[in-house]
Amino acid sequence: GAPAGPAGTGKTETVKDLAKACAKFCVVFNCSDGMDCKMTGKFFRGLAMAGAWACFDEFNRINIEVLSVVAQQVSSIWGAI
Image (cartoon, rainbow, N blue to C red; front, side, top):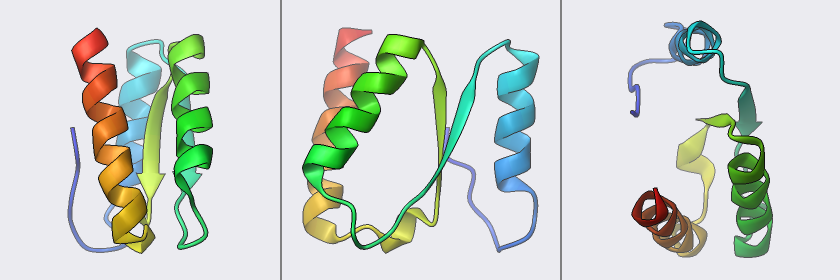
């Protein structure tokens, strides 16, 4: 899922609480414009190996070029599930 809304409304805490209720580890990742495709690939690989959930804070800060590759990476993960 992708919770959306104004800052300070508890989106991140809600995702963390849901993960805890489902007995899943949740990694909160603060996105920045310094992210690259290689970094996100390694991050997703680690999540998949651990079976963990991710919560991407400040997702809007990711450069559009990187965001395109992230979308492809997520699509590949969903295809493998």
